[in-house]
Length: 92
Image (cartoon, rainbow, N blue to C red; front, side, top):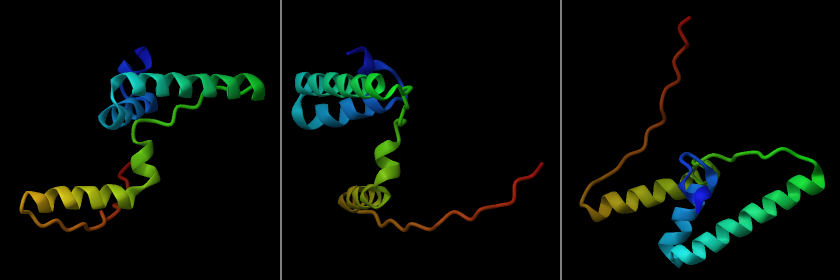
C-alpha cells in the first residue's frame, strides 16, 4: 500500500489505473506482484531499480491519450484541435 501512496511514481499510477477497473484489493495485489517481479529481476541480474515515472503510460501511447482527451471533450460538446508546439532556441 505504501508504494501506491508514494507520489510521482510508476507504481502509484499503475495502482490507480488498476483500482478504477478492478477494485482496490486486486490493484494492491497486482502492485505487490509488480514489486516482487522487479525485485527478482534486480537480484538475478544484479541491477539497480529504474523508476519509469508517473507519465510512463502517456509516453508509451501518446495517440491513445489524445483519443481519450478528444472523446471526453466531444462528450462535453467541445471541439479539440492539437497543434505541435514550436521549439524555441534556449536562451543562455
